[in-house]
Structure formats: C-alpha cells, structure tokens
Image (cartoon, rainbow, N blue to C red; front, side):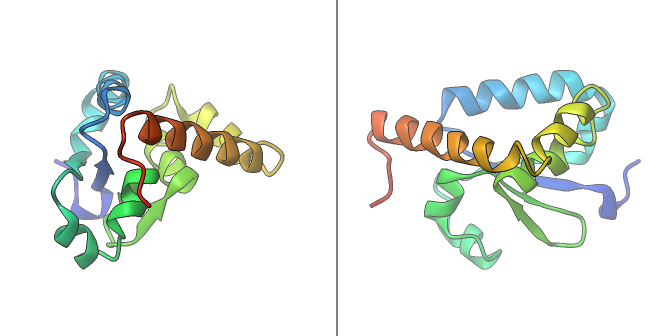
Amino acid sequence: MTSPEDRLRVFYDGACPSCVKDRKLYERLAGRTGESVEWVDITGRDEELKQRGIEPDAALQELHVEDGQGRIHRELDAYILLMSRVWLLKPLAWLIGLPVIRPALAKLYHRWVGERLERTGRLPK
C-alpha cells in the first residue's frame, strides 16, 4: 500500500484526446507504480482547482501535479515529478530538467498546447 506522502494527484485535460492518450501510456509504463497516482480531469472543476490554488485557465494550459504534502508542481516540474517515478521514464525526466534543454522544451510545450487549444476553440482569453 502507498503512503499518503507518496501519492500524486495529476490534474489533466480529459477533453484532450492527446492528454488522455498520454495518461494511458503513462499508466501502462508505470505498472503498479501508477497505483499511487490519482488522475483528475479538470473539466468542470474550476472551484476545486481554485481551492487548491490553481487557476482554471492555467490548468488548461499546463500540467499541474499535487504531491503528498499538498504542494502544487506545474509545467515541466510536474512532468519531471511524474516521470521520475517510472524507471523507464527517469532518464527522460532527468534530460528535460537540464538547464540547456528545459527553456527550449518549455517554449515548445507552450506553443504546442496553445495551438491545440486554439484549434479546438478552447484557448483562454
């Protein structure tokens, strides 16, 4: 059994087919480790997000993860935290955290998400 300190809550866009696909891939790669991760679809949960200190528009534009101590990690920090739990993804988590790679990857990530939200008519104003 996983202790509460080891649990993660991942706030993801369940209305995004690519996000749902990424979640399923993570669960498959994580195996039993994935049992310590609770996936929360942000769709229609604006008040819950605000109570946790997460702006709904920000949650739509970048991944947010709450750790077992209640701290919120966002954007690439959230991905690094989530990926570092899976042995197969640990090297990738390390790589995206490198100072040389991180800024460029963050820029690409925001561009990709912005294009996806604009294409589906859900880009916050």
